[in-house]
Length: 200
Ligand code: URA
Image (cartoon, rainbow, N blue to C red; front, side):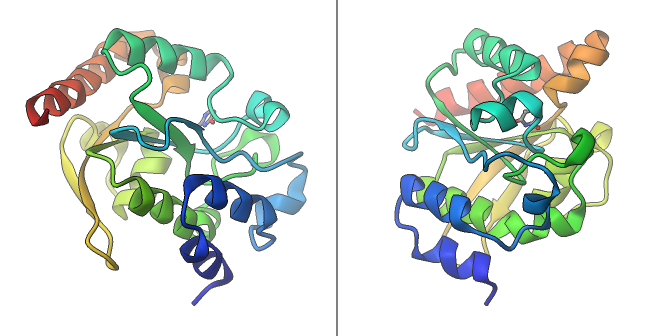
């Protein structure tokens, strides 16, 4: 069992998990210039878990995920879909990759036990995956985000009895660069909001 898995399994709340992440020294990104770990923000009891790629410059500075420009767009979209206050937001890696590059699959794999533990502790009713890097990592898929997005998948942990429907969608930073794709992401988000209401 990896050190990450051992630490993650020992955490019995998201608060304890955030501390375990901060203490974890096994991620190579840690020594590459990141100022601090960035774990999550939102309500630990929320029905929706949102997973992004990894912290950017503003997140690295503030220690919270999605607090920059992409995060502001994400918050606006969540609010417009009626999901304000109904999410806990995290990333596939917890340290900013140098130069803001995409985290490698190996870096994501090192952090995955913490992401899986977040999922297991929350037992959310739905999961939103932001962008190709997060979607491929969580779904263990080689498919591109344009094929994955908008389609419900199931995320089931090998251990324990945890599963939830998962919606992959476009990353808000991509939406800022390609605004014409916003309507696709919006459709994905609404599908998630509708599914939550139906389950209520
Ligand atoms: N982009 C991400 O994927 N995550 C963040 O926390 C911020 C920007």
